[in-house]
Amino acid sequence: MKVGILGGGQLARMLVEAGTPLGLDFTIVDPKADACAAGMGRFIHADYTDPDALDCLAACDRVTCDFENVPADALAVIDDRVAVRPSAAALAAAQDRLSEKDRFTRLGMETPGYAEVNSRTDLQAAVEALGLPAVVKTRRMGYDGKGQMVLRDAEDLELAWRKLGEYPLIVEQWVAFDHECSITAVRSGDGELRCWPVSRTWHRDGILRLAASLSVAESRQRAAERLIRTLAEDLDYVGCLTLELFAVGDRLLANEFAPRVHNSAHWTIEGAVCSQFENHLRAVCGLPLGATEARGASVMVNFIGRMPAPCPWLELPDLHWHDYGKSAREGRKVGHATLCAPDAEALKSMLPRLDGLLDSDLLRELDSALGAT
Ligand code: AMP
Image 1 (spheres, rainbow, N blue to C red):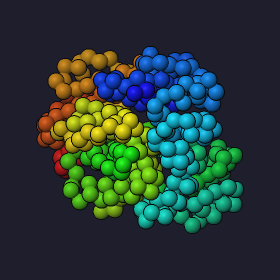
Image 2 (image 1 turned 180 degrees about the vertical axis):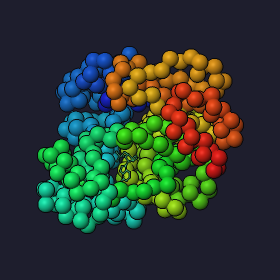
Image 3 (image 1 turned 45 degrees about the vertical axis):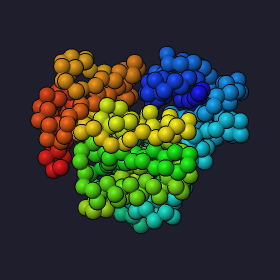
Image 4 (image 1 turned 120 degrees about the vertical axis):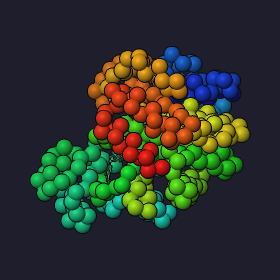
């Protein structure tokens, strides 16, 4: 079966790695000549709206995306010629933070208080209604903490307006969460839905640094599953979907969702029976879904900016290295490593050996999260 992918980043690369043993044949389109999936499958170096590139995608059996901000024009051209999974409508639903939050509200999913902002007066009114601290975000095209600014006191409003005022904005209440987590599910074309265990996540400057599959309470797992099922069914979703959550006491507040494979579930490559990448392709291609159980406990460390040397870390017996082959650049995700263990206790006992691979504050937080399981 031929699968076209719009976007040639590391997610496309890992999709190809997972799909090749299934016998799938890939065509990737990306406007960057040095896209990190460029060496995988058939690579078309072209703009997303290039008619010839879109013709090549339309000749595939299925088309999927490795990012959500795919231009609507590109999908409109191929939508009636090839099965696009997830659908153009599901992608569009994640492109605007305001409609995303409105959807959560309509579905009865708790989300941080928010307000639409289109003027300096709106910004003032939003902050008066929601209180400080708050966070102002561009409604579109923001990712990895880009296009956002935290508002701590009244002076920050002017600064934020100067920096972001030219865009349509949303202001959200700042949530003093206990921790962040996310849940990833895969849904097939006939509506079967399977969830991986909840991932605990740690961000710094808006960028994911660590994601861990620990054993969470059954009630927490069920609550997260109910939320993602509600969302996936509302979107009539096909493929992998991730819902990012803030945990506050017993409550789970929806932050945002990603209509694609997601960084917080990279641990599933080695740490689950079937990975998010393989299951995404299974769903997209109409194949039976694989099991989503974790094999034990695992933690994934993101490498941001530049890759560390692989030694001595490769000496750890169940550590798996992923170098995306990207050049070094500040704030850029260039690779990750996943450390697996039979259970949380065994994983905790391995943590001192990660000293130097990740910041000591993250290591401490991970250690205490493992202690709490
Ligand atoms: P986002 O791009 O919206 O997922 O934001 C990136 C990260 O910034 C989140 O994972 C949180 O760590 C932090 N963040 C974003 N919005 C909020 C909020 N309303 N309250 C607290 N932290 C937030």
